[in-house]
Image (cartoon, rainbow, N blue to C red; front, side, top):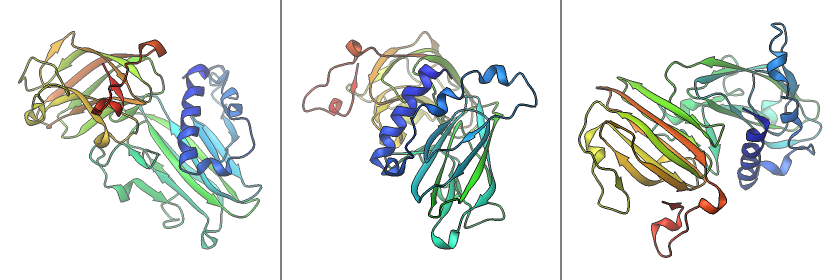
Length: 322
């Protein structure tokens, strides 16, 4: 992910985290310092013995393998680090050199996904694990709580440390995922294909930008209709087919709370092109597990003058779609 793309995403996360109270204790460091340290990383990786290391800030975003060390210079009571990988990767996290006082209220918790504005990605209905199993608490299970592996390309840690000179080191390693599911896009532009191989689960591709989405291929095991239905029209009833794709828009990350823009339950090529003027745009695949389902799509960031205008006294005030 390039610096130009990563910087807006970090600013977005910081703005959201400030609403959660996390930024109150952010260290007095330029927000982009860690991003500039990633420049030239590809060249450095050419050396097999190179291990990327840098300090971890109270509010941070990590997008590369390496070791990230946090040392408190003063009480840090509400810290979080968001970790993101490529869409086809999952994330392995391991804690080393942990020096915190759990009895004094210190903690380190790893979460399988992201929490933003009180909402969780992936949502509880899209994740295969119950919510309590998605948290790994170092203090509650010191024997096994030092490592965790994400189910998708995002993860995060929360931590609170009261005493100066206390801290820990976080090791981040990315692993290949042959069947990516529940992806947070690093970029506002790109293309992707989601494949569900006989699995009964829901998979979302989330883009935290207002974008235009163009579905280029849709292969579902059960064809029911040949009509794209907008939410403003009569609902098509694709949910009854068991295998379908829906487009969602919203200003949060929980897909269960987002506005349904369209749903499709037929197989074809060269499908719809739609602008979603929301903070978050989602392509979501619902699979019964009886078939191999596949959806390919392209997406691009909407220019300011392309953002659809809201309509008064309607659901479109939630976020504009066109």
